[in-house]
Image 1 (tube, rainbow, N blue to C red):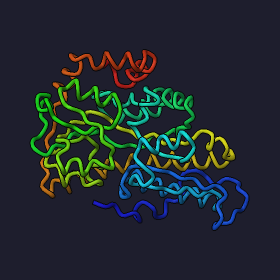
Image 2: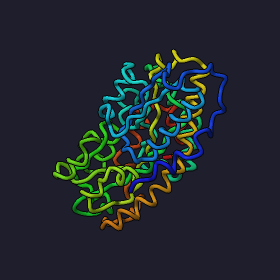
Image 3: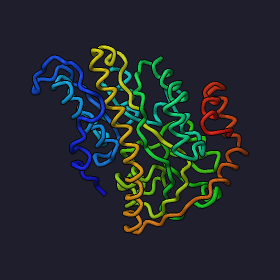
Image 4: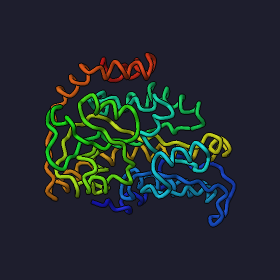
Length: 335
């Protein structure tokens, strides 16, 4: 499924931040050229809304700022782009999992089965927990935008069988992002987690290097992973969000009015993208079912009980720290 770019880019470009008193700048000669990299496919709402923000920024700054968007891992894998942004070789990027290798608490949103609803997600991520995490990234040279992109709830896909109970994961070779929380989660459930860069995932599934993977429906559909997977098990085991990162030195070198406009435009894009993703997921599920993919709803309680019995929550409370864990449970309740 491809969402029409025109549907996203129409007459709403000027919405969001009010235009600021910029000096008149030549539209064909931007003073600030900024690059934004993402692994999202070009048709994903997370790309379409950032492109919309880019055009709004250009318009509101009279061409002073040109935010160039590179989807589909054009500038490298997510770990590569994250490293580039930290070093200053890239200005902006968005990701979730790989950031935990640098700032461990950056992965706290991925605590399995923590968020039972979007109300709890946004209470935490737009509130005290999100602010705490953003502060930690600031200590390693990264500025983080105040609004997180919604990557949706992650679900498990498989080529040979649906995942119904924890026993179905015993020995199951599952692709995960390269970070410890995902690895620990699936090891605790008896699976064989295998880190593979997203750009290499389709081929790994096609050649059965792994038995399955886990991602939000929008990404399963837009990256066409369903073409090489027969089953989608709606586990919703992790809520996944993409922080929007900027290199802090580059960010702080921009004039305050530019930073204000870019922040407002990207925050507006993230807020709209959150609405998009729910509709996108519904359409994605219908299209994949029409293509012959089998869906099943997972009873999450046995999985949560298995994680609790295996010490998963105790281990990650210790790793994230009492302060961060208290902020998480403030929004989601005791785990």
